[in-house]
Length: 160
Image 1 (cartoon, rainbow, N blue to C red):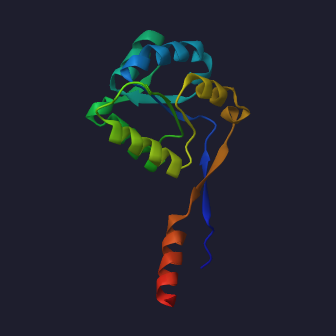
Image 2: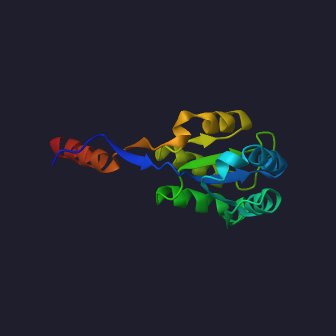
């Protein structure tokens, strides 16, 4: 059996977008969503706790809410990435404020990288993502074929 080094997994035309913001950035994210409501309304939205609630109330968009970040919301979003249920993350994080759940945030960022998920951590990057021509169609993200990596390691061990 021949296995490729990478697996292509499609991101559909209608994206599943997670919206997350630290406390000092929540209003910035809400304002950004208001400015981009016409684009975002074409996609499925979810978010962590208060952020999801604020967007749903202030922008009147449907947003599936997970727990707040400190109560496991970042981990819930990460697990949804692993399950293939989230295609993109917009995360307005506050680099100047210590977060009690920083390990969870790092885990989310790591899993987004492992699964080749587009991730914006500030307004400029979020603007670039939404303005991309790739927002209007499918895109094949490339993730490492970990089954092949494991098989390669086993083969190397047997050869030693």
